[in-house]
Image (cartoon, rainbow, N blue to C red):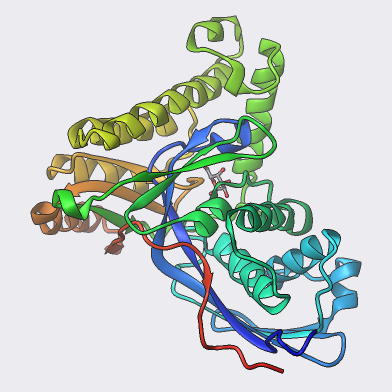
Length: 379
Ligand code: GLA
């Protein structure tokens, strides 16, 4: 540490909503997430030894040392923090002993990327402590380090969309991501819903999933996609066209591949619709995505389906599950003055089935992860 590096920094990193492009990232495909105004905040304070403590408003505190991180003995939620320290250490960063304090407004396991936000808040905090830039190239590097933390350290085989959304998001914009190559290509797409008197209603079904240790559905979908690509003789489903899929004799692999190939096409069509203010077309594409995720990819559940159907019946331009599925949240694209009737219709549909009413928010595209200025104390 030099005399100009801070000893304490606070970083904030948002969760995300995925507008469209679901289960495409690990298939070298396309997606269109945006950062939301719910976020994880991490305060990192340098210690003068190799100790590491992690406290959170959501779980039991953890204490140990950097040696535990390297020995890979950290488990549970602190492993997301340890994984980031490990990944950046592998990249040559000299991470000091730290006291880390975490708080989050993102519902845990609710499909809004609470884990990616935790990873990104810690990564941005470490960048601040170590005097690293937070330019675009650095953010791409941090996103990749956080993805490695999650897949190689925590053991959740996720695809990289969530970290890029958290680190690259911007107000009134979605992040178009193309995973064709190992280094993803990204572009901001303006989605000024509020200027068009539209809003996105996010409904949290309350059904919880875990990508790391749940019923294995996420990992199984990945394997099925890889098996379908292998059967078609392509490197990934990104390289398959809809007309190629007849060569798949296994009906399950055919359905999984049909979702991925058609979803990539829907992302392209949605970007065009949003850029041309064709909101009704964008809504239709969102609902088509849900149908494909429900019927072909089989990652929906009754609570997600009921929320989507109730929203569309009540006048939403379109609606779909967002995130990995098996629970979590839906999004609905809604005219702002119709938002109350849409949220009421979803509540009524849940009540009619004897389910507790879901939490609903209007979440606009918001800023990406950053340091909170003025919070650091020079050494
Ligand atoms: C989770 C994963 C992402 C992505 C989505 C599905 O959110 O973390 O990488 O695969 O599921 O689109």
